Image (cartoon, helix red, strand yellow):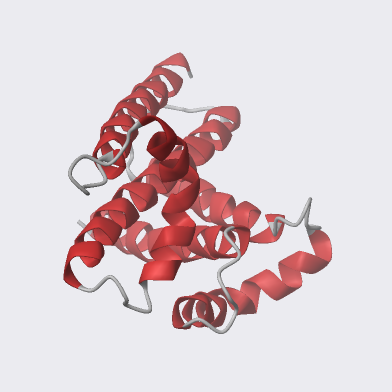
Length: 186
């Protein structure tokens, strides 16, 4: 029972922190303005660890790799801790945990895209001029724009989010299958 509580707390707290770091990485990558409330929140929550990490982990081609590496490290710590506390008896190699942490970040990325596409579609119907609309468009634009080139609007309805959600579901299945294969291989 105490191990389950510790596992739950580690997974929840470090998982949310990893999500905040990953969102900060994508906010910076998609060039959302620094003074936008979403950006300010993510910077405020994660800055205490990102600033020192930037001294050690350099950026690459305009990408703040320190936030990505920290998000990966949080997932890695979650996986190691759960394995140690779960008393499963199975020994998993460190290399498997390294790969599983990357797979977990890929899964989180797909979930972020899935949620933002749904939120953007709903917001476009309810309040298309919301201050959140440009942020969601910045996130989903790289995914939806290629689809919009091939899928024209039908009666003024943009169906590209629907097809993007279907593709994301397929990718989520692939990532989940890859995760299972890594667990069984190691």
